Image (tube, rainbow, N blue to C red):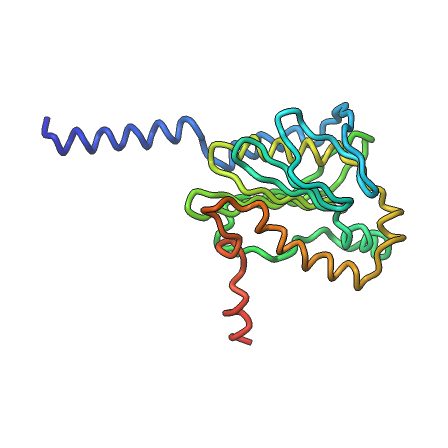
Length: 223
């Protein structure tokens, strides 16, 4: 057997092993959400002005504010935000469907799932979950009426990160009345603009949020 053929076989074996270890991303994430509608008993262990929530023991908090908290799991970073606009919209426009923010480049979308999860109070909540891939790095986006999660992770951790986001969403209790009482429409707009800047705080040194986002400059020039 020639040296070149041995090298080719070796590379194929590596590729097959990689597929066997990580598996298809759609299959792996569908499996996570297969239990989304099952009720779980979750004891909240963190409390703030607008949200009481659960943090898994293997996940650490980095920065905490009344409306936003960032976490780290292995080498992955996550942000949990109170969805102020979603809460206010559901108050005044009950029939308005859940939509995403449209920040991210749909050309990089590799996974999308819409369904329901049951929170710890036994209430079903609609959610949207999307995963964007850029050079084997993944940005995940989860939104429900009350919460928004963002995460930056790799192929190895994508399933575990998704599982933890779902678990935290199930265990969270947002004080919707206080959010509605304390935020005007202008404050919602200003707050949502700040969320884009928050992405930079969860990116590792080799990641850039602009790589995942819609090219605003080109969209503006085409108008």
